[in-house]
Length: 275
Length: 260
Image (cartoon, rainbow over all chains, first blue to last red; front, side):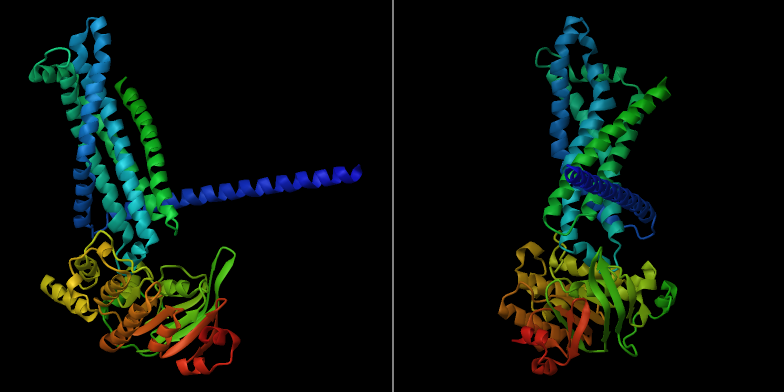
């Protein structure tokens, strides 16, 4: 009996010890990841203001991120406006407030749906693209090759992508907003007849300049987060080909999550400033 | 230990000769966690020689040349390249040393998104800033002709075979006229004929560009063809150093297991 108790106690202490070690390892790994991410941010900040800015690569990335996302953002923006109109119209008709439809759709699109949906679409397309591209460059030693060619890979690969995302995502958002309003006009014309210019003037009669500023400002942060997370995950990918998929996947998940969190914070700040 | 600054190095950007060994590695230690890869490793690369580093897979050969190019930081010991301790160099000074050291990667490491011309233009525009675009174009054509692939100038890396990728990668490395070449498994994954062609190219590069080279390989045929000296690496330490003839005549068990 005493022997059994001793064995049981030994087993429990062993399990407790193993659990403590595992917890310690998790904490250590978490702290290391955090330190890595912080150092990466410092590197980006330092290289952004370096004299030898890679303008050509920056323009190339603007083209890749901005121009090549246009078809996806166009379809998403137009459908967003169309669906919002079709869904809202019956309720507004019930309350006899059908004339408020253009304004309501415009405010919803400009303040919230346009920036967030565009950012989430870009997190999927651009964030995963950056994660996969840089991850595969890491695996195939292309980043090392850049390093031995006296080229700073952070300056060439990361800074250009992050800045291009910060510039292009606000522009894509404004473009998606515009197409959303056009889609909304198309939706309003399914069960009625509204002139295009009348619809637009009604829409913008409700929209305030102060609706636009916070909405555009937060898209800069969305762009920064998508660029930084995509590049960080790709740049720090492991050595095997499997890590390329992991980098792309985790870039999308983390960037999307951060977009939602930033949006929540931005809404709180805007609300506080408005009241 | 010299603490070289970039401003000092700017003054003599392109020394063509260097007295003493061009690379000197002393008592080098490198570990990944608890795994010791190099322990007390020592090496000297003389001017103009081809030194082959032989060893089993996972013996730390690639880690060694990555430490020399400072793609990996070593734990202790010293690495002098052209007389400068690479561990003490700031980024600018390190870049100036790297401009004199060509690195041929095992995978070729060609930039997938660029054509062959752009791949070769990339280091040229960054290292040989004094050259005009016409001179750069002429230089690119010259090195591509030297590796026998001038016709591939507008191809993408995905259109090239394994052997062609290695040749283009070699062209990209020699286009900036390095003084030292580091070859990481140059013949791995290639058929015997292409491997032999790459080995011949290594010899051509040595003669034509007067380079000193470290060639990491476990391809014996390549080693015997290109080596002036061979160094055998085992368990992170130097097992034997000698000429190819000394290695062939050696009765040492590990050496014999490689050569037979």
